[in-house]
Image (cartoon, rainbow, N blue to C red; front, side, top):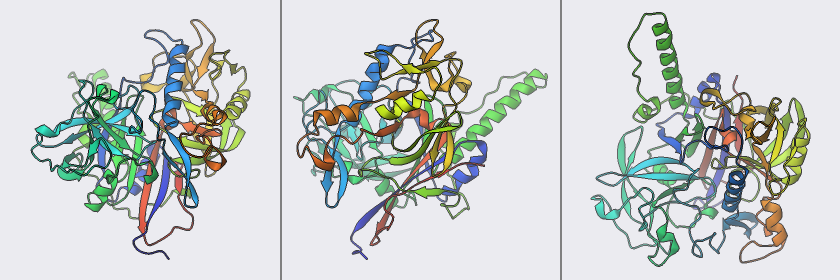
Length: 503
């Protein structure tokens, strides 16, 4: 038994199939009010093709892949105590100052939610970042992005404490959705030096969702922990659900089941109205509310108390820091082609990234597929008329991945959801959304991990044999992440995650 002052972090991840039958299971987490934030993807849905065309822009895809890999290369693995953890590299990323905060504010392609801070309220866009653990607000001298300026807030309590060299630690009023109240929260408020390149960047904020405090660069208390301390939420849980390629729901304290239920009801109402108009029973246009936005004002309660019921739990693995899980199998057209693959979850990646050996084995199981010639050999093509039927196996349950057409937002791209678009105009081959990534191989080959040891367990960025479950992984599933805090108790099994397949 450890001293009660010791704080142990228990990490869990739960994923549920978002068929309508799973809503009751998702609701099993909602035993207290849940804060729902509307999500949007900056720049709109990811499009690998140019406007009015159905074939890909390979140069653009290569640039996007490089941008994703750069985000994963901002950390290094180090030994701390008796375990391997991830920490920010000391040297800054491309174009940033040495020791700059990880992540790029207001970048295109990032998923974000909006939060109102201060009085009168100033609305700021919070970029989600699953690879860092900090929440901070940045004010620069440029006109880009969304601004929170402490000079215009009547409720701010300033502090001279510096959680980071360029940041202070004020407290101000945060306007919370769903429960429609305002509470004071402290946060890192950062203003880059006027002599820094970073001051030319965008203003805005970042919400780090990584489960480990080792990835926290500021000394501020996380938003989730403050909400727990103030008893606004009862569970250290958040969930992510994507409705389509540019809209979704972030729920803190529970799941987005309530929002999904309301979307289902709105869709049913609209379809019923269309049917009534066709039958001549109605002649007026349907004027329904935006359900997701309306749901932000409605509290969520549920009578179920056993929130673990129906979920299968397993460990989160790898160096402590990211949401890394064990994928027990990859199934292609009913055959298991890979097993026991490590995978990191990252909503901001538009691709599913696979390590080199896994990517080759995966596409070798798809008839007619082959890699593109250099310099685009990270990408693979397959016959557009024969997209594979994919399943990913977690805790002995198979979950469908990128199956079928593109649904209500279908834009005419051939090859279904697995396709990024045709290889070229008129081609019968499409480019697959599973992309080969060599970032771990390149990093370890160069032996560059920032300052410190270049050998042993900390060598490289640890991504050599790891998949990245990007945006496509969230299509049709709801992901629930739980960081449970236990005082005076060491969980014998360490960190865990859970999956559930709906009936």
